[in-house]
Length: 259
Ligand SMILES: Nc1ncnc2c1ncn2[C@@H]1O[C@H](COP(=O)(O)OP(=O)(O)O)[C@@H](O)[C@H]1O
Ligand SMILES: [Mg+2]
Image 1: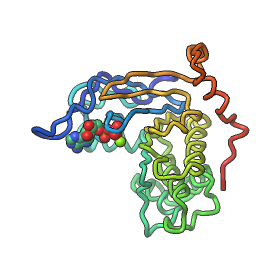
Image 2 (image 1 turned 90 degrees about the vertical axis):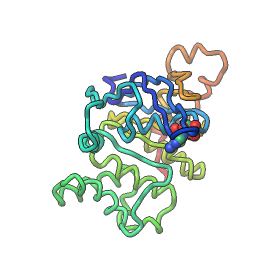
Image 3 (image 1 turned 180 degrees about the vertical axis):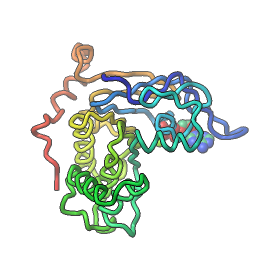
Image 4 (image 1 turned 60 degrees about the vertical axis):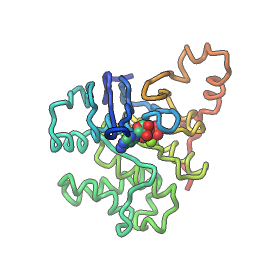
């Protein structure tokens, strides 16, 4: 792994009030580097979204440290946190979060408009980002004219257009059928490997495993596993799972985007 792009150290998070108060994270340390796709897997309620929100500076930990690009965020106020997010982090959600009244190009461009980017450059970059996710021919389409998989690709283009060091995706394939889910994971894996970006994907979909470089498991607010399916340790694993994962893993050449 390269220098961590984003890092949580001993993060604890309590959520809710009174009798509903829950310790969602019980001391979690996780560093995510550039150039690889990391999966964060665990059962529902295990703390995945909470950890992603803390790494993405959308939530602050009750205790513990978060570093983005080596910089601790503890003393940052809301405006500074927003700036850290804008400059470093791209988000992709299960439900796309596109503006229905804007076409694909304008949905992506909006992410640069809010950053005060020159409009000609913004247009250029947005077209490039849409082409990267295989939507060069759908730039003028509105969300209602796009499939779920295509809408998610627009959301990915919007997340990468500002060139963030890390992309955080919370169950990005959960609302998609397996073919579209597959295509989205191909896009995310390419973004990690070819653009040296860190990509962290929360999922409980085991079909995603062949696309990943690293799998972090979380249960009941604690990290209980962290392994790389392709490394020596996993190869020595006689269970056969790791070997199956490697065989299934599509080579970069084979990874063709579906229309
Ligand atoms: N706003 C909240 N108030 C109280 N408890 C919450 C809140 N959000 C999440 N939780 C609880 O925190 C735990 C972790 O939630 P979450 O991070 O959303 O899990 P996951 O994404 O793995 O399903 C769960 O027990 C959940 O019920
Ligand atoms: Mg969740």
